[in-house]
Length: 514
Ligand code: KIV
Ligand code: ZN
Image (cartoon, rainbow, N blue to C red; front, top):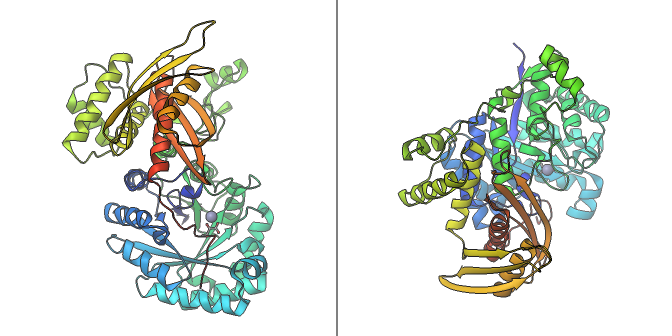
């Protein structure tokens, strides 16, 4: 039997730090349940001190998830650790993850602390966290650019103080695979008490090396990898969970370890995260991209038909392609609908919501013969998000004709009052957005607009993502419909509603007061 590699998912924390990826409590719980079903070992649910909303989201995940350890992030400050412990106390098993930067540039410029002060504060934080749980993780932030002697001193001291996991972050994605592997080997060799903790890695993807660096660390003794679904995360993101897990599994001839992940759940998780955050998955993305298992060229197809392994190193069904695509249709009743939601781990917590979702399902089934799981996920996201929105779409009529300027006539329900307006634009989507703005006058900047098909075929639902910015705040919105202009209106309104409600939250790596 090989060693177990612990999979620590930080989609709900570092992933959420991607601009515009912030999630509501309900969305976080939905993703956490999918991660539990994926059988990740640890779910980092958020940074509880960031805001009341973040605290409540971590608390809700802690109270829901039973099969994975639920973790909360805390700077090395008493108030952060107390808040994390409070949010996590309802969990079946919980971990406090505390961190403090150890690189010269972070200590001098950000923390304005001397190395000895940093060491003392790290030890204090770990001891404080141990008052609440035995499961304490410490991260020397920016370990990748820290001086090795100092890094060894800090790690030895935090292990003595009770840290059971020591995470080595390449915070700025600066390391190269061989050097990062060597760093891991050196730490394990030089630190006298290294056998008393699990060594972990947390790699950012600024040079596109997050997965390679993580795997190199695993080859050199790391036994936990911190990663996110679809590689979501701060700036260029984190190591992609699906790539790490499938590399370990596919190359079990090389790696001295295994994971407990149920890989058949990977695609469902990927789609859910993309759908909720509004970050589309590029078609050529490894494992979960639409082309990852598509063999386009004639030569490849010929090879595959003769023998699958000529061009396939993994089976598509092992990561959930095909497996979870059960079909519902126009004649499917309420029970079949409920059953399918259950098997997708979706719980709607009121009869009213079930009715609303079932109504939308029936509308969709009238337009589209076969309803796949991806359609259901998009439909549920739509139902759940529109439930809390202050501004709702009531109706939309668009005229688009050769030689004529497109025109949109829209009716919105704004805080309970219906208002209508018409506007022209360079295309139907532009006209729709202008009509919305004529009523809302939000002064936002549209940063990104994207359309993807949820399933194949021209009767597919289009999933539209928009990213809006106002006064430095960035939000993503998404909407799905078989009519992409309606999907666009839904996405724009979804983002606007978030801008109206999102409150200020602290970023863990920007403010660090002692
Ligand atoms: O990238 C980083 O250093 C982090 C820490 C909080 C672990 O996200
Ligand atoms: Zn990070």
